[in-house]
Structure formats: C-alpha cells, structure tokens
Image 1 (tube, each protein chain N blue to C red):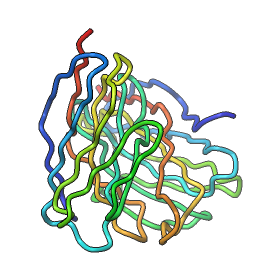
Image 2: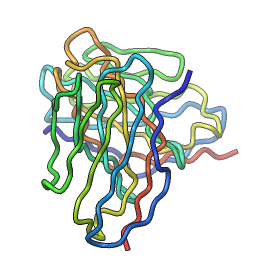
Image 3: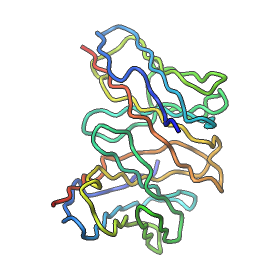
Length: 118
Length: 110
C-alpha cells in the first residue's frame, strides 16, 4: 500500500517567489496536516484539514495557506518567500479527523518536501 | 500548549535496553502522551501512545508515572536501526495539533 506521497521532493526558490507543495494521503484517510521542520528542530504544526475544512492552524503568517480537495489530497501554498521559510515541509495523514476519544491520533508522515529559499 | 522536556542526546549499546525519559509537568487530564521517532532523511514515525496506564506494542513500551508528570519510552533491545531522534509529544484530546520539542537523539553503538 502506498504511504503518504509528497511532491516535489526538493525545490529551490528565490525570495519573494511563491511555492505550492502537494500531498496525497494514504487511501481512505480523510485528514491531512502540514508541518514545517527547520534544520535541527522538531516539526512545527501549520494546518490540519478534515473533509476539506480547516480544523486547526498554527502560529504562521497569512503568507501560508492550504486547501484540501474532494479526493482528500492537499496543497500548501507559501507566498512572498523569505529566507527563513527554508525548511522540510512534512505532510501527515490520518483516518480520523475529530481526534476524539477512541481514536489513536496516529499520524502517518510523508518524507517531506525540502524547500530552499535563496 | 503543554510542553515536554527531553535530554538532547543519549547513547546505548546494541542489544541492550534503552530508557528515554520525558518530563511533562504541565500535562492536563485530557492530554495523551505520544512518542514518534524520526530516522535520518525520513518523516516522523509513530512509536506508541498512552493516557494513564503503561502500554506495550511490538516496537516499545511506555511507562507513565502515576502523577502523569513524566513518562519513559523503553526500547527492550536496541538495534542500529533504532538510531533516530525520539520525540515525546502531548496531544490534547480533540486536536491533531502536535507540539514537537527538539527530541532526544539516540545513538546506538555496535
């Protein structure tokens, strides 16, 4: 079974440009979350989507946006790129969306998209 | 958001047990304790989670203190493939917002 797939795996942009990162969740998973991991640090939560609705947002500026499509795949968009946006962007999927009692809350991560901003 | 504190790094010999500690003194009653690990050049991987009772699975055991202010991830026999950064995370019931710290980098010596 295919795991979470992300594209592109690596990309280089210059300051001020825009980037779109894509994520395909595991088949049957309806929830997608996005994380940013700067070198040497743990991942930081950006967004969570479930059934095409935003369910959570981290402390990131409005330059960061995301959406989820009817097939549950997702895009993360970052506008007006800054040098500090250079990071590994991780997508994670889960079969559950409401994370209520009874579900494990387990996330399945992809291998990430490494963005370098010059 | 509740925070966790872990040692920056630990070493273990191959085939020996490893105890990875985590302090979470501000944990609330509805916070789950999750452990993930991240191997080099990969995304994080689920290891185990618990709420109040100790938990075992095929990968590891999780020992939770009675007051829930600390927990320990136990790898029963470390292998070279267990070398990774291990993250202890608190997840509030009803959210998928995981707050990762900097984790513990585990080095396994052959």
